Image 1 (cartoon, one colour):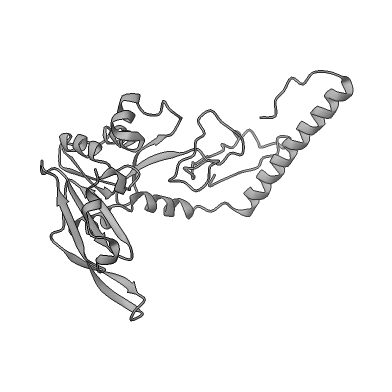
Image 2: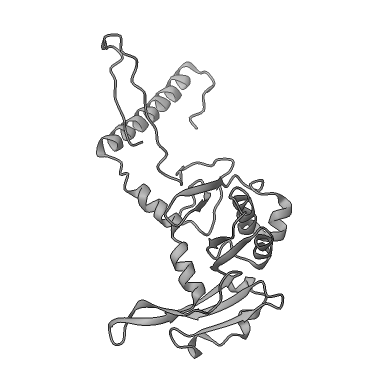
Length: 269
């Protein structure tokens, strides 16, 4: 909450209306220490005690849509079987944006796949994203090993139908990318730190990497903006003592029930 106001109910306010409590949702991950019906663990999050959500954002951080993960029924079963969980989420989110004009859709490796790429092409949406090697139909196995590629080197394969291009770019480590919009050309350069000769150097990178780096940071920008809304120490103290009072009341309730030899009728959680 950005703003918090404390009122004395016993004080007279001269007929003024009770002050409103303004709330703003600042966190997209809500932490709990107990089980809830739609709790899950995803590899894309570090902590397992959070409610997960998927967000669709513009490059400047404007959130266009989001989807809260609520378990197996978050996405249709048919879509999950066809596209996987990540691809099914992409299908739901892309359905809420206008596609009359050509749209470029950037994803990370958790959501990228050939099946969802084909679906997006049919909707005039073109995918750009890093991809897991086990989602490339074994094509990455035919690429040179990382040790045989120099930094800045690139190799690509285009699918027979011409819809998808798979690119492997060598930076500090290899980066596989899949796209229906870009390939290698036109190439450009980016600044990277090199251990030898311990300075910043120019590294060649393909068009698919350049576009992915340019447009992929929308969700990260949103989190950076959220992080600027810090919680003041007064709110931390207030919530701490509120929680402590609640726990004390629960313990006293248990003691009272035992003393009176009555059954507990209220659950703490």
